[in-house]
Image 1 (cartoon, helix red, strand yellow):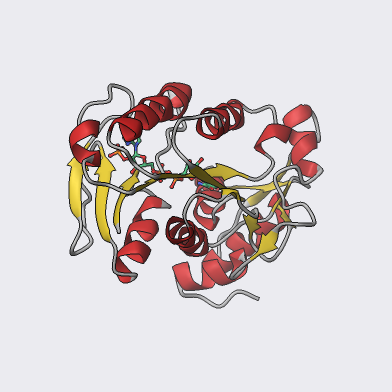
Image 2: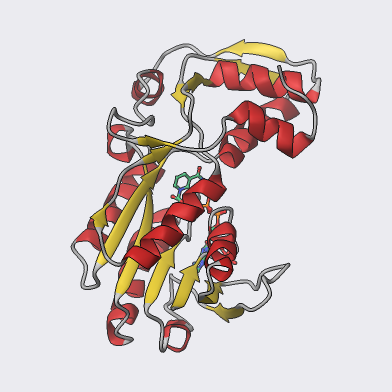
Length: 260
Ligand SMILES: NC(=O)c1ccc[n+]([C@@H]2O[C@H](COP(=O)([O-])OP(=O)(O)OC[C@H]3O[C@@H](n4cnc5c(N)ncnc54)[C@H](OP(=O)(O)O)[C@@H]3O)[C@@H](O)[C@H]2O)c1
């Protein structure tokens, strides 16, 4: 099958590309910049979700589009909400048969601007002109690691009860590839990692894995976002599916050191 992966150079997009290629699909990688290490057998097409540049040519003859693009800055709505609208219009012109979208477990429960953007993006896709599949996943281990890595640069480890259920991005990529093959299926089962842990516990795992001396910084449960996160708003509900390994195992693989 001819598949385009928008954001195919990103944390999620790159493993989606590799998975689809391994399954024998013909994959086009769509993003503004070409991948540093292209996956053999794929072609890169320069597109910009904000301007729509390059989209019509990139989607010619494509059956399914996976949208794994993201922008976490001030322009997130322009890239992900207006951008997906522009993308869907281009898909409609190209007669694409299936749009696969990734979103975030509990995004409607946390009043954070990026999550509001995801809710709006979901609405555009589910009310849009192209038959769709929508998968929600919890935070990738890479994101948790980036947050804690940022704090550790200031020699700090947050001590907080905010809870997360980080997931292996390769497992999420696999579900998106499954979705491509299954055809338009609407909202599919939410996906998360095997363990719910506080950010304080995750910080402690990382501190131990990297052997760092960090100052524990208590984060008071002040503000709606912090309180919602403490109430596990971004974790799976009972009907979600847990997959793969936890952050301790991710740390072990990433930093090649045993974690107790
Ligand atoms: N990170 C998480 O923990 C997590 C958890 C659940 C769901 N998700 C969702 O997964 C998706 C991917 O997230 P990610 O963390 O993998 O993102 P990422 O690593 O930041 O990758 C973003 C991708 O989007 C492309 N992109 C950015 N702006 C673009 C534009 N204007 N036009 C075309 N392409 C553009 C980037 O390439 P260029 O910059 O070269 O254009 C890159 O390939 C997002 O929808 C996110 O909400 C993420």
